[in-house]
Structures are given as C-alpha cells and as structure tokens.
Image 1: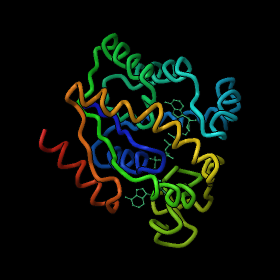
Image 2 (image 1 turned 180 degrees about the horizontal axis):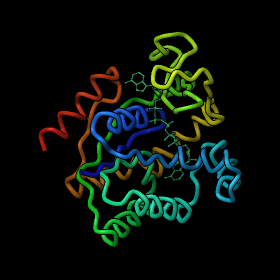
Image 3 (image 1 turned 45 degrees about the horizontal axis):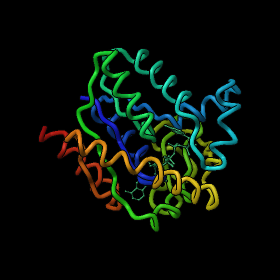
Length: 215
Ligand code: AP5
C-alpha cells in the first residue's frame, strides 16, 4: 500500500506520516525533510533551496521530481507515504509517469482538511528533536519530561526558519494556489480520502487507520 498525505502547512502531515511509519511500517518520504537535510549538508540543491524555503515559496518542479525519483529507487519495494509531494499539477503528473516507469502504484491520497485559522498557531509553536526529528508543540504536544525527547531521550530541540507568520502567509498562498487543486485531481482518480485534520492527534490517526483497515 502506497499513500500520499496532502494538506496545508501545519495540517499534521508529518505528525501522521511519522505515526504511520512507526505503527504500520511505511517509509515516510518527506520532501521538506529532504530539503532541510540538503540545506544542513550545504549541497548545491540545499544552497539553492534555502532562500526559497525561507520565503515560503516552492522549489522548482524539476528539482523535486529528481529527488523523489531517486528516493523511490532507494527504497525498493517497501511501502511509502509521500509527505509534501506532489505540490503542483506538474509534480503530480510527473509522479504518475515515475510510478508507471517504476511499476508502483498509489493506493490512496489522504487529505487533511483544516481551516487556515488554526494553522498559524500550530506552525509557530512547533519544534522537533534535534537528534531523531520527533515533532512537538508548545501547547499541543510537549515532551512527557521537560527538555527530554520521548522517543530517543535527546535534549537538543530545534525550530524551523520558515515557521514564522510572514513565511507562513506565503506558504498558505502557495498551498491554495498550486497544491489544493490536486484534491480534485486525485478525486478524479477515485483515490481521494478526506479526514478532519482539526481533530485531536489520536482522532486523526484513528480516521486514517479506519480508511486503511477498510480497504
Ligand atoms: P514542508 O516541510 O513539507 O512543510 P509544509 O508543507 O509547510 O508542512 P509542515 O511540515 O509545516 O506541516 P505538517 O503538515 O507536516 O504539520 P506537522 O505534522 O509538523 O515544506 C517546507 C518547504 O520546503 C516548503 O515551503 C517549500 O519551500 C519546500 N518544499 C517541500 N516540498 C516541496 C515540493 N514538493 N515542491 C516544492 N517545494 C517543496 O504539525 C504542525 C504542528 O502542529 C506540530 O507542532 C504538531 O505537533 C502540531 N499538530 C499536528 N497535528 C495536530 C493535532 N491533530 N492537534 C494539535 N496539534 C497538532
């Protein structure tokens, strides 16, 4: 089973993808994480992407399609969940071509439906473990023991440079203009499933689990 998780910035894509990776053996393919790793390593892609990401705009399609193509080869036959890709009509069509070439198929596109009003608070309060990447939130999800990651025990945490109100406004414009039209694209292929992304963590996880278990 292969999935896409689709939704605006801060909708909970990464949170739910991590949970699916942990509980059901999916490989999470987060293009945002891949780009941030490239920025951290100072690669050519990372150097070009950094300013674009900080402005809240999208990295060019050809760069993203190559990154995903390489990752799909790397993971072989393992089941995957795409988090943050595709984000444009061009990326969605390129993905169709790549999957056909690589003899893979999508099972579902899970859309996290949520109002913009909730998203800014979610994104501005977000932080992650600097060691294992586990996600947290100042209000909604603090580590059980203050200053210590629940998953790996790490004590260093970090915040993203695009998690501020100005970049977030641009990210929402990019989402509504370029990514939201993919909801109709996948509805047209009859693989779209929508869940309430504004519900509590476990409730969202439960809605996704119900979809996977029914099918
Ligand atoms: P990316 O890293 O993909 O960011 P994004 O889409 O903006 O999504 P986020 O990671 O911000 O949010 P999320 O939905 O994963 O939410 P999360 O689970 O963390 O992309 C970053 C940038 O890279 C882009 O702007 C672009 O420049 C570039 N890029 C990436 N992919 C690209 C592509 N394909 N093409 C072109 N450019 C690309 O949750 C957010 C917070 O809310 C967390 O703190 C979490 O704890 C909390 N939370 C989650 N669920 C709940 C809940 N149910 N209740 C309460 N709190 C919750």
